[in-house]
Image (cartoon, rainbow, N blue to C red; front, top):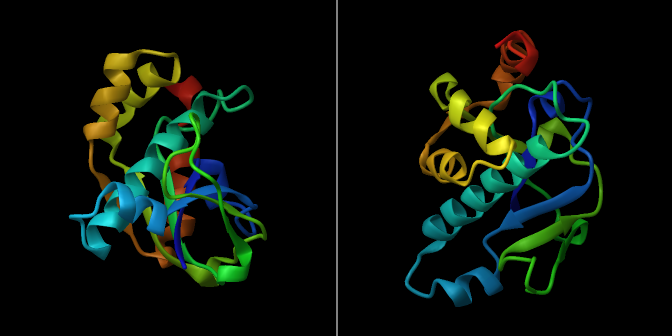
Length: 162
């Protein structure tokens, strides 16, 4: 199953991606968007993961992380994914990845461009208008082979250097 894991720049330097809540093109998501094809559902799942990345950036302890959303698209075994029931705080397509994900399973990295940093920075502090602008920004696609260089680039521009 292709999953979209919300992440931060620190995850790019990790040996593997830790288990976490993610998003996928599930039957629950398809039920909400019956007119969408598989590609449209994948886009929706990746956008949900981008929003969740911003929430990770706003969490206590993430203050020094770079002001860019990171989404890791990976193909994991269905046995490593548990679909979560839709609830007030759980969107359709939300899944729990129950085991670490190796970098060999990663299909792509999706990361904000540098121009999005001011909106991401403001959104981290609760600025709703900035959150909406960040949500409208496209994420850039990177091959997993670019992970090291991307991790270095983002580590070189932590929040406290702005």
